[in-house]
Structure formats: C-alpha cells, structure tokens
Amino acid sequence: MNETTTERPPFRGFAPGDDNPVLETLLAHRSTRSYKDVSLPEAALEQILDAAQRAPTSSNLQSYSIVVVDDQGLRDQMCILGGNQKFVAECAVLLVFCSDITRHIHVCRERDYTYRGDQINTLFVTHGDAILACQNASIAAQSMGFGTCMMGNVRNDPPGVSDLLGLPRYVFASIGLAIGVANEDMGLKPRLPRRVMVSRNRYSDRHLKDGLAEYDETMRRTGLYDGRREPLNDVAPDAQDSIPDEAYGWCEHAARRLGGFNQLQRRNFGEFLESKGFSRR
Ligand SMILES: Cc1cc2nc3c(=O)[nH]c(=O)nc-3n(C[C@H](O)[C@H](O)[C@H](O)COP(=O)(O)O)c2cc1C
Image: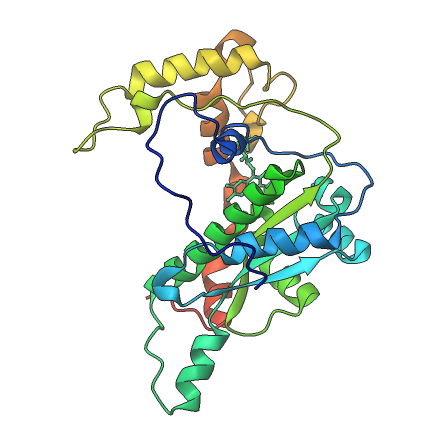
C-alpha cells in the first residue's frame, strides 16, 4: 500500500463548527448517476484504493478483493447485467468489491488445517468487509470532488457477473462502486427523522408512525417521486394506481418496492453462493 501518513491526528477536542473536511465530505454525500466522459487519473485511483484498503476488516482477515473495471466493453456488459443502469457504462471506473475467502482456504490448505469457516457467519464477515472498503473508497473519491454511486445490482445476475469478471470459486461480487466526474447534482436526499432511527440504551419504535408521516411529507416535497413511481401492478397485477401525488411518499414507494415481484429476482442467490463454496448454514 502507498502509505501517505502514519500519524494519527492529535486529539483537539470538539467544538461544533470546527473546520472538518472529513465531516463536510460525509455530510455532502449524494449518489451520482450521470457522468461526464472524463477519465479517472491513475494517481487518484491509487489513493482511492489506499483508502479502501485502510478500512477495518473483521479479525484483520481482509476477506475481500477489488476488481477495477476501467475497460469500456466490460462496463457496458456490467451495465446490461445490472439491469441497464446507464451510470455503470458512463462512469470512468467501476470498482467491484468481492467477498473473497480464497486466501483463507489457501493458508489453511497449505498447512493441512481443516478450514472451518464454512458457516453463514463467514458470509456476513466477507460481505461486511467488502461493503466497508467500498464506503471508504466512495468517501475518498467524493473528497476529491468525484461523484460515486454504489451498484448493488452486481447481484442481479451473479453467474453472469462472475463469468464476465472471471471470479473463481470462493469469490462473489458483493457491491460495485461507480466513480467519475459528475454530470448532475441530485442534491441531498433527505433521511428519516432521527427519532425513528436512533434510540438511546434500549430499542424503541415509539416514533414509527409520526416519524414516517413526517418523512412522507418531506420526501413528497422533494418531487423525487414525480414521474418515478414504483409500478403498482408489480405488487398486485390487477390493482389500479389511484393514489394521488399528495399521498405518494416514501412509505408507498418503499412498500411497492418491497412487495413487488421483482424482489424475487434474487431468490436464487443462496444456491449461487453455495455453488461458489459459501455456506448458508
Ligand atoms: C448497498 C447499496 C447498493 C446500492 N445499489 C444501487 C444500485 O444498484 N443502483 C443505484 O442507482 N443506486 C444504488 N445505491 C444507491 C442508493 O440508491 C442511494 O444511496 C440511496 O437512494 C440514497 O441516496 P443518496 O446516496 O443520494 O443519499 C445503492 C446503495 C447501497 C448502500
């Protein structure tokens, strides 16, 4: 790794309003789904990969690998496999973060030790490591002014992605990250009210209803759903979409998405993982 600093920043205490570029980057996050035809300088890619590899990993097992997809033809194919999300073809580079236990199997086999990681926990560990590295890369890229968008759709057609990128047994694509120069600014997408998501010392859902109602209103005001409703006939084939715009908010949008038949698209993912040598037990 290309270490640029080995020093931890000194503890300076905290005062609201302090200059803090890391927080500024985190709080300015938005996904970018349209990119200019501008490449990513190799030096920037290196730093983004440094930041990705600097992410913590479970037991320092570093259970992931990254495939840098800068070949246009391959990104065109990835775009198709992911359901034609055009940002995948348009971005400068697509990083594919893969859950990977090949190195674990290797070190055990070399020593004639029985590999005992074949359990569902390994899936959480490897996928978690991959996601954390991806988020580090995303923030690093955004701190340089690039736009990013994650691509969970690498899991739409797992065998297709696996073949295209040459992923062997014990490796599967967990998440993709598109990086490039933004050609749009969608602005900040509002989040659920804090009281719905955060409780202190003991879990609480007492703000569920009023918090969701507030969020529905906030999201309706953004206009993000105008002309971009989830189709109701994907949930109930014969249902009429008679909901007026004033009543279509995050709750309806999320419920349609979660109740839609296209949720079933990934139902064979478990079998695929087993075929790759990951246990679901
Ligand atoms: C695990 C994960 C997978 C995602 N996959 C996709 C994707 O395949 N396509 C896409 O357009 N956005 C994807 N996103 C981006 C989310 O849609 C986005 O983060 C969310 O709508 C909030 O918007 P924001 O990032 O602009 O704040 C993904 C995000 C995460 C965390």
